[in-house]
Amino acid sequence: MNENAVCISDAFASKLRSYKNAYGAVIERALQNTVSLRTFAMLTLNINGKDQALDVPADMPLLWVLRDVAHLTGTKFGCGMAQCGACTVHVDGAPLRACVTPATAVAHGQKILTIEGLSTDGSHPVQRAWAELDVVQCGYCQSGQIMSAAALLAKIPQPTDSDIDQALSGNICRCGTYPRIRAAVKRAAEIG
Image 1: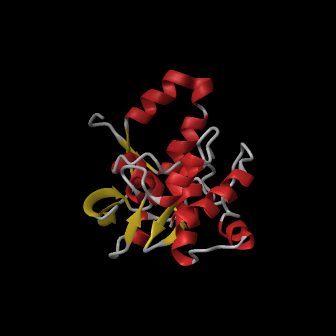
Image 2: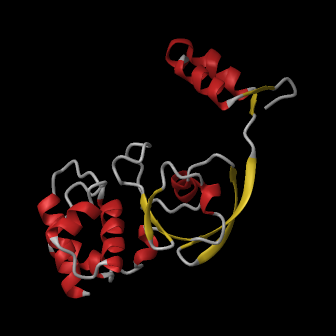
């Protein structure tokens, strides 16, 4: 950035980027000479049992704080609208869609649990059942599926098919492994 930098909003910067295909280098040079008007927040988040002090944009969703700032990439981006469940994490034991939740909303002593914190060695009953029943195909949705299943089993240790379907209804699997997912949740309940 140089001394002639101009302040622009993130929305305007995004609009400029949309013209980048047509105007390439001109737009890139313009963006290099801008300063974002974003405000930052210093947050202390308890992630996987450890407090982390992080300086992040105040409006940054928890998903991007986890992935880009805390470098925990197991939680996936799927839709950005809380519709697919790929970004599911636990906050104080409850499943939460990290893609639409501002990090500032969970910076008040809540405990955030990601797929990396569920079990470092894959020994959690849900992870064991997933591996035993070979649930994964592409794997993209699986961290969200596993986190939703773990939250269900913590609340209802012996869930019915209806309980499983309801708890996982917000998690989309594009590969269609729903029968194996349901079987794995039942198996995880047996493993306990």
